[in-house]
Amino acid sequence: MLQERREQGAGPEQDATARLMHERVDGQPLSDAHIASIVRNWTVGEIGTIAAAVGIVAHWLAHHADLQAQLRAEPERHDEAIDEILRLHGPLVANRRISACPVQLGGRSITAGDRVVLHWTSANRDPRVFDAPGTFRWGRKPEDNLLYGAGIHVCPGAPLARMELRVALRALLAHAPQLAPLPGQPPHRAQYPAMGFDRLPLRLR
Ligand code: HEM
Image (cartoon, rainbow, N blue to C red):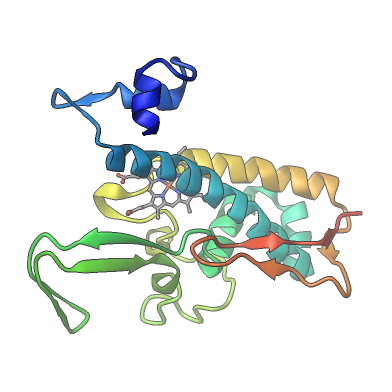
């Protein structure tokens, strides 16, 4: 077991995962399942989503020259554009819950203990919430966009993610004056649960 090997002194003792293994919650060490879940969140949730988001934004702008030109001229619109592009093509599909109490939702009865999937990408294209849900539009209500979730588990990394994506977009526009699709080289979509693209050939200059 990785945890035991680390506890016996194998591997670096001062890195983040080592600290996690020695963490105590209510006086108890974290279980292997909790540690695996947290490490998965750090990697898939926090790094994978950003990597997917950068590709999604680059792909969208390569295919929407008008928006690309507008963002080159109006950098103050970058944050809103990123959130709207990622509403349309979310980098994180879903999260799961176990219902704590019986509830009626969307005409369905959910009983305590039921497993529920929160489908963020579907919610973000809900026609009851968004006019023309499949269309990029300025001026949408930020609170309707569930890109970073909602409620007590809302993404605590959202401000950092937004900053990282702002920096990435600025760098992309600065270094790719001819950002466009490459004819004859279609992108290849990543497979669920990953999102975005695992192959994205683009013309940069
Ligand atoms: C585009 C990038 C990102 C997206 C789309 C995203 C999206 C989300 C969503 C939808 C949730 C809610 C999960 C749930 O309700 O079960 C969440 C939770 C979380 N995110 Fe992010 N995230 C991103 C980047 C980041 C970054 C950069 C960090 C940290 C540096 C981060 C840290 C977390 C953590 C720790 C949680 C769990 C919060 C909890 O369960 O209370 N995320 N994220």
